[in-house]
Length: 224
Image (cartoon, rainbow, N blue to C red; front, side, top):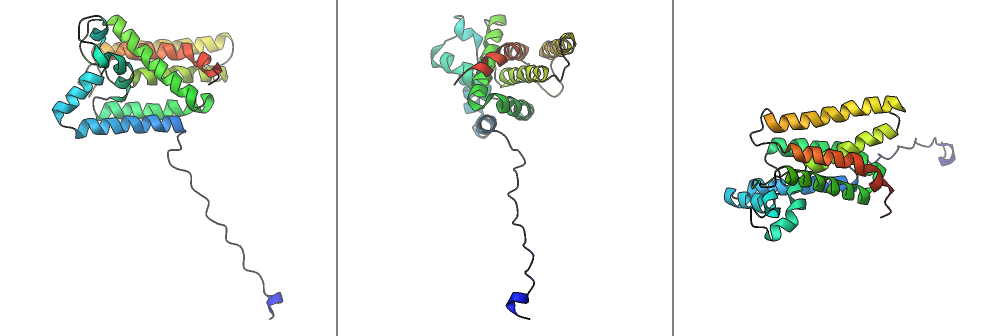
């Protein structure tokens, strides 16, 4: 048989590049990695150093009402407190929620708007905490305010997409979800959660969530 008469071998398709298991958009991925890196530093540092880290970078309302020394900590802690966490359960729940809600919001808003939205809602949580507990000297830590804001944004996204019905039906569906979230935040704030020894800052959850509901559309319309 000549070369011209030989049957060509079937082409073997090249293996396709596999998608990563956690295909997170860039801003969400950066926030997740930053939170994990800071938590790793918390647990690897000596206990006294870690405690000082939390005291300095945690959000302390008394710094703004004259009940505690302010200094540089008062300037940076409204943001830095969002990257500190109080244990494995705390970081685990927050990072999981960040991946779930953050990815959805970022895909709609884009990275820059999502980051702005994230930090604004986190700041709103800290603000409500300071208004309710102005003399508190206990550092508040965690990304719960910002993540609650992301959840508020997700609810608005779902409502706008028609997943909660239209007109009055949408309101009837949305309001009970909002009420349930707020009630759960206050309940667990006062009575705690199983397996969690430290108090839960319900104010941060409520402030961030309400800010998320109110700021989602304005942030979405921003040109940045």
